[in-house]
Structure formats: structure tokens, C-alpha cells
Length: 244
Image (tube, rainbow, N blue to C red; front, top):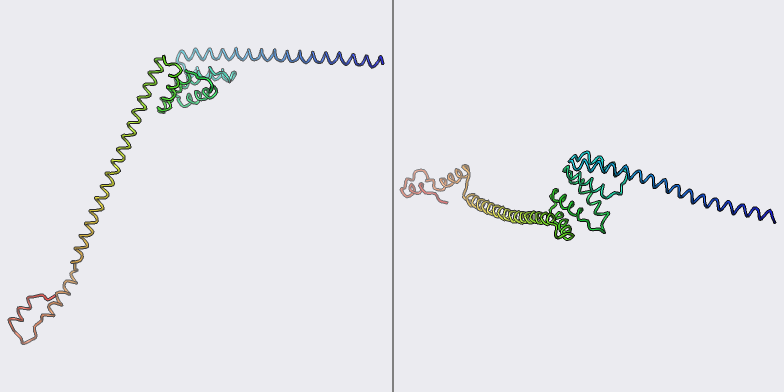
């Protein structure tokens, strides 16, 4: 019995030690992970700091490189991603900038971000998508009605949309006018061709070839030919007539 009790005591001590060891191991792992993340954050922040510096100097290419390095370390950083989109916009790479802005808007679908709506409005406008630009600035204006810059952009794009609609309406009217004009010309041409054909048919009813005309004249002469030995004035006068 004493032997069994000793074994149980040893097992209990070992289980306590193993539990404490596991807890200690987890704490150490968590500690090292936090240190590693802190280092990543520090390095990423240094890249972003360099990128921001280059951005302020209008060195868009260098800023792009630094922002990408920062994102490689901290891919979930919305601010870094947004700034990268801004560098694309400044370089005139509007499609790439739009892709990033839309990605951020999708990630933050439940949040109304004024900066994203303004950036989307400006980028859509550069790409000629005035209707989408109008909607983006409209959302931005609803978030901040006192923002004069947003209001001016909204009114500017609204005028572009209006002008495009007017041109489209005018173009449609011109197409209809040209269509009607072409149709009328075609009808007039068909009528002229029809009259010409009818006239040709009417003329053709009285047209004979030279051979046919000679044959007809010969037949007429045969009908009025005077027998030999007869010289009557009446008969001679008939030779000058054609009996059809």
C-alpha cells in the first residue's frame, strides 16, 4: 500500500510540473511573437516613414517602393494601402489607384470613410466615368455637407454629367434626322428609278430594230406593187402610201 501511495504522489507532482511547463512554454512563445511583431511594426513604420517623406517631396516612384515594403510586412495596414493608392494616382495610374480604393471600400463596407469616397470620385472622373464619380462625391457630401472642396468637386462633376447627357441626346436626334434624310433620299431614288423604267418600257413598246423596220417597209411596198402594163394615176398615187 505504501508503495502505491508513493507512486501516486510522484504522478501528481509530475502532472503539476508538466502543466506549469506548458503554461510557461505558452507564455514564452507569446512573448517572442510579440517581440517579433513589434520588430515587424518597427521596420514597417520605418518604411512608411521613408515613403511619406518621399511622397511629400513628390518622389512618387520612391514612395511607391517604400509603401510596398511596408505592406509586405504589415499587409493589413489600411493607411499604408491607401497611401500606395495615392502614389498611383499621382503618377497618373488611375486604374491601379481605383483598384486599391475599391479594395479598401470593400474591406470597410460598414464604415463611411470620407477620404475614400473623395478619392473614388476623383479617380472615376479622371477615367471619364462621370456618373460613378458623381455618386461618390454625393456620398462624400452627405458625410460632410460643410466641406467646400467636396461641394465644388460634386458640382463640377454634375456639370460634366449634364453636358454628356445633352451631347448624347443631341447625337441621338442627329442620328434620327440623318436616318430620316437617308430614307427619304432612298425613296426618292427608288421613285426616279421606277419612272425611268416605266419610260423605257413605254419607249420600248414603239422601238424596232433596223432589220425589223426594213422588213416592215418591204412588206408595205409589196402590198401596193402595181401590175406590169398598168399605169393609172390612182395606182401610182397609192405607191406613195403605207398600208398598215
